[in-house]
Image 1 (cartoon, rainbow, N blue to C red):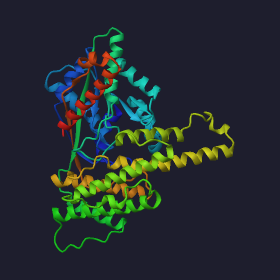
Image 2 (image 1 turned 135 degrees about the vertical axis):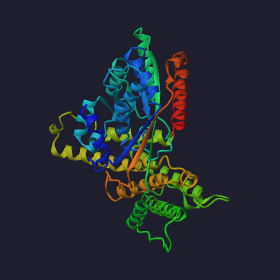
Image 3 (image 1 turned 45 degrees about the horizontal axis):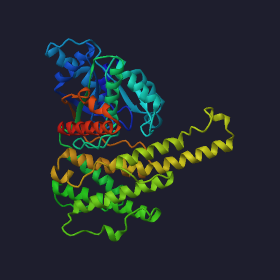
Length: 446
């Protein structure tokens, strides 16, 4: 209740450097659909997962507003009886408490959070807690199926299969207990816009990035225009790519595509050329990290990131060491710290890739809106800040934002359970199909 009461203040204040907020208004669309589902949940007819988009770190505030205000309001307007509170349990990455502080774990535990080792192949404790809450919890379960923020309100990153798998496990657990509840996954879209012009602040951010990266300012005699800003963003992107390519070519030459293979191809646009270079750079970054952890470069970029994260967790939080770290000799502690520090440094390569996994060649060119300009500039700001040594950069506020939260049509998992139960191959395909359908549903909400 305290968090709900404090929400208007939290929307406006920056309570942590890495938490920008600055949200002036939240618009909720189709909350009636969710109010009806909550009514069925409270009547013991359904269990469900809220699968929400995760473009920014402050998305949980939008979700909290949806449940604490949007759904109850829709219930009142449509005479849908609901018991208070309307809330959800939620899954969060255990690593957040490491870089944000133990206070966050304390707060999340009291709000109904379940910590999961996101990079761990099988976090049995976290999965057991999630499965138990799905079938017996007082509230539904909220999860971000993208696994991490991508900084793009209008691009959905490839989804991880965990949400679909949890949905099928829930249906299976209910069946084994002889319970008849239906299981659903509800796609939730979250999108941010700037209601007032932000061009002057955006121009200052671009100038700041040019200074920080040693790029001479672009000569301007006239008032900045959309074309000039587009040129500045492309120029910055090209400069950052060149600098990063130089870094990897100097220190990790074996992983970066040779320059001769990156020469412009016939009829290749400037954006397509940049994307080809970016993809080669991201692959080199992953290979540099994979070599340290002795991993094969297999699967999608997301698959590779998750395997690297798991390897990093295993190296930093070693299960072969005694639980009482003080029992180690100073020399042994020093060696353990050394190994953990090296693992953390190698994981920086993976963090670089995560930041740019959703970038596409035509995202800004197709719709050069203030929001898309801001997203690209802020992603470059994150990269520059991290290279400068700030692991938790305080993103500049470009202006007050509005959040639009859209409830999609619930996807029934129970209707697919027979396919999932047929055999192992069918189960894998059912999870893949459900994940693909959820991806399409989230993309339709943009």
